[in-house]
Length: 462
Image 1 (cartoon, rainbow, N blue to C red):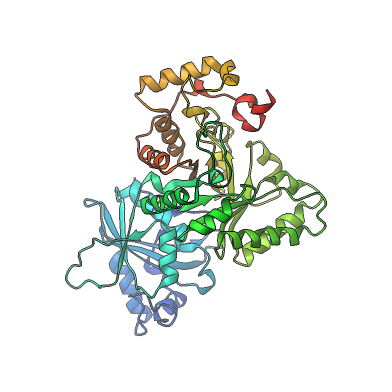
Image 2 (cartoon, rainbow, N blue to C red):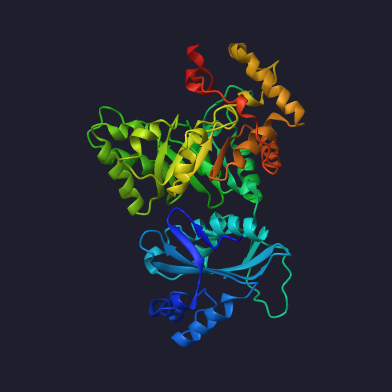
């Protein structure tokens, strides 16, 4: 049975009906000044003609027409339409209207488009979405690029089609990969033998990732020169997630420190706004200045400098004390074949149901899961039984460690982004190739909750 609605963190989408046609909806269509890039905008429309337009599409098999509604208030703020929608051909042509002016410029299109792309793939087998764009619609083009669309240079125009440029989005698990850039600023990782990524190599990694459909970058103020290097090499409108370090104990003006830190990051990154801003030490929210700290994050979001705020945790148990007091748009946590606490604790499902965007890191356990027995550091020999089981399972399924790690992380549909650290372009090519592999889930006996193993911050303590 097909799902008739879609939920995102802020909205729900359902099939539009004649009952949804209102004076406000009519005002969106008639406002050509505000909607000059929307072909359906027409000042001659009246309620009857608009009802007729919607009614004609309600029961057509080749049309998917959704209204966009705000969760909680049920406010109708826009529509998204796929016409024609061709399940046999695996493609759909899209149009979107954010009619409510108060919701424009707030990432609605990106959030809605990603959810619709997944829905179309799951329910209709549609993996390709195309849309025509007016070259003067720079804001729209940036939103489409952030949602995974790329220029479609090879499209042949059919008779009667607009000659405006076309964009295309191919649905793939690659879209859910994010580039972790700690290696851009520091020689990081137990398996890292090449050191810090050079500037030219960083540029090649970003260019390849962007062309492949990757659109998210993960960094942090504490990642050495990572932000500066990204600022020098990012040529496209990436969605950037960065993290604030711990607030120094001597800080008297917490709000001022937060804003100064974020504006400094924006300057280094050379971008006008962040997609995500996370706290690297979220337990500070429970301290004396916690309320002030969270309010400073919320104010940056209200000012349009940050789209989503949240926390980066080392273990899901940290959320137990934070969740009752704070509402997070985004949470980042470790997750891999050995460390599955985010899922087994129930937090992955709980965050997803609450509309919180979940990003996971450490999918290779800092490279430890990618090593063979000969190259694995001797301090990890105490888990030889686990490693032998891991190696046997890989051999049984004819998998490389990289294939297994990527397949497992991407098999968790509640995870929005899988952050992968990258040492070189060659490595990144291999990672993205493995992101397309069929799902194979490692046996639950490979799990471990031994902190000495799954928490890299403890490795040097033993």
